[in-house]
Image 1 (cartoon, rainbow, N blue to C red):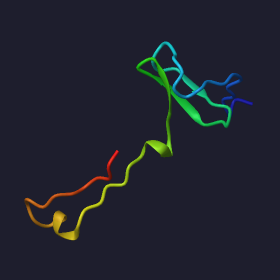
Image 2 (image 1 turned 45 degrees about the vertical axis):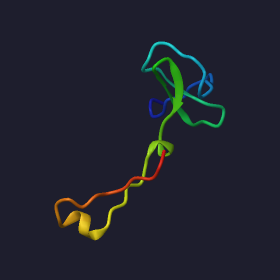
Image 3 (image 1 turned 60 degrees about the vertical axis):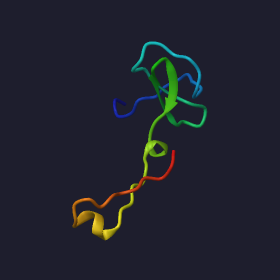
Image 4 (image 1 turned 30 degrees about the vertical axis):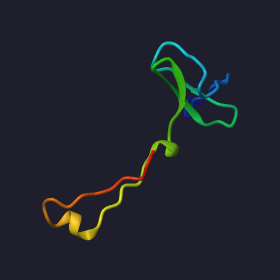
Length: 69
């Protein structure tokens, strides 16, 4: 219909791929991207939450912290 893209085959996160920039999907339908020769999941799992105190936004020298990993 020209509205959607259907990827017929599946890939496995962590498996090798080539060339970089390919887009695929896993068996659950999650989007994968070929990066540095490896299929990697993209999307919500790639985001991180960064927190900082109110003072971090007002005064120089205050620091923000990120969760480990």
